[in-house]
Image 1 (cartoon, rainbow over the protein chains, first blue to last red):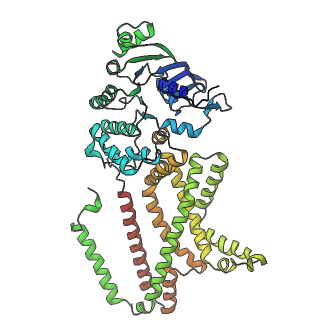
Image 2: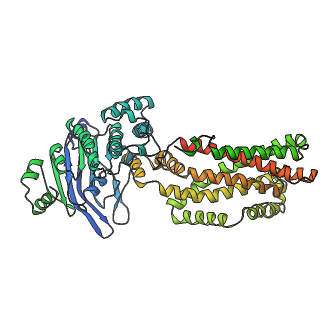
Image 3: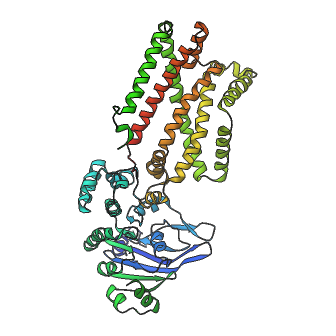
Length: 268
Length: 260
């Protein structure tokens, strides 16, 4: 009998998918939003999740870091399954808070409405999780944050409060905040949906840049052209199930299911 | 451009300043101020007492207001119910009544218990000061508990979600995001409430705490003067209010809010 901490276990973890969603169900009251979704993203994958409103795509993404608690199913990050137990009301809840908090620091989320902390400067937002969650020394976090600010083109906004930034700038700051925790997986929840049309481009450029450097990303988006360009795997959700998935070229040019054909016809 | 940045040299301000100087000159020339040097030491002590009472009860009251607000905004019913009841009772009854209930009611009850009368705490329980502090603290807590309830509830859910998503424990999220964000939202209201608290402090003179108001009352009894001591008292409270307002403005400016 080999111990669970043997070399075999370690190599299994390295080759494990970055994100694995298994048979995910989510019910809000009477409404079943997710009806058994399974999804695998390998390290370096850029997975675009598309679908109409109410198809459950945001809910699925939010279940991955447990902002939404699944009713049934399992989530694994790099081979580590998030411990869950029945909540006594027919659903699940995390049974190991420590583990969940640790896993969450490896999953950075970028929200539709940015959700920057308004009482902190841009720099404060970026160093907050590294310093106060991960215990990175402050100067080190600041040095890294400055590099990230440069990368997203916000060096001159370092000491500005979020309320004084445009939507595009706020979202770029939020992406820098996400990068600051050096995440293994980035979760983008409709990152450009709340932006004025002329500001969408600057945010997409930053995300495309991240995709090119081989970051593992799950991206819920309405930007079909963008999804096609940056993703290497596209998932089409409809009615709480994965209706169709595959490489973008095939999904976009030769959709098999009728629903996907209809969906693409309406959004393009 | 905020109003505080505008020059005092504007015409209507110059007129106001002239009127103010006129009143001071009139008061200095035509009124009796010979008693002032005799009481100056006690007046300074009285102002000290008033300020200490204000800071102590505002600080303690605020410490109570945070859990009171949190319980109402996010607590289970067995916490939010009592918290709401407390705030309702405090805000629904006069502070003078609360003060007298504590001092003449609770304070005299203690005297019936020999154990208390013989204990180390009796010298404190026999004096008026603790009852004044308690009443003003509870009053501030009641009003600010309500303010903090609104402030906690008003912090955008998304910002709290972001805190969770980045791995913060509930305690860290509260300490780093929810509480500072709520205080920041409540600050303008807190400034006004603290000024009200300052002007509630003279009530303790009715239970024999010697604050600046009590000193001025003493002056009036000793000198049979009416207007001069009261004018001085008004001036003192206005100056203290001014300092408070400036201090809060400075605090508020630390995190600028975008004005539309």
